[in-house]
Length: 326
Image (cartoon, rainbow, N blue to C red; front, side, top):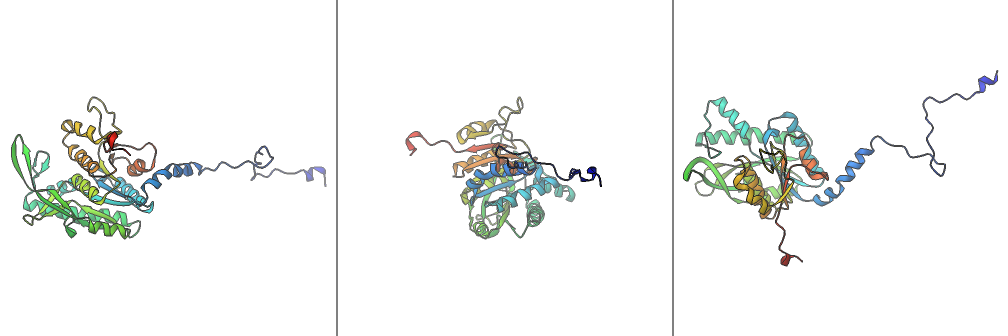
């Protein structure tokens, strides 16, 4: 046997580690380390929101895009497992319009609001409670027995009265379109206390005439957030947030106070008015913050709540006068 036979051969599966100042092997750099940093970034937000109620208005393109719907469901279930108490409120404008078209019903709008005949209200009720809500509950329950669907009619959760529109100074009858006059959050509180995720369709019965009315989901979500004493209201839409000077600029206002928002309301587009009015109502009713998010962005809810940057526009209460501060 020659000396060459005793020559140590390199171990192809082992790369010697660099040593630190004490001669000990240096710590490895793990590929998963960025994930740990992301989790740590979320820690203060997890602490702040733990045990708090979050009302989310589900709408916009997120309602019709399959990937966005699945991502939304993941976000809501994540909130629940992270210790928050999410409540989902939904409308269903695109689905209602599609069903009307399928049935050959003509949809009429006045002052930006759908005119709802008694026959049309039957379709609205069926689509919201029997299609949109069922699909959303199903997506959430893929992750466990969590979601429970109900409408504003159930347990008198929402009470409404007939709403009229003002068009050029003239009072216009919108049919079975209502505005919310009362909230009884007892059933939803019971579901939250049981660890469930309530999914609420935006229809309500009137205490005046007994009819069922179609109510704006943005308004319904805001009223429910106030009644529940929610920490935040989140409204998903199809824009990035509230623009500072649209269409001259696409800069998004990241944060503004209730009073600042109130001054902007008269100049907003008709589609944004109910969303921003809902945000204003919420923060003036005791909700900590109200946020408008771009529902076209996957996991927009998690980005808004659990990252330092956040996305969208956040409305905060007016600061207390100096004399009222402790």
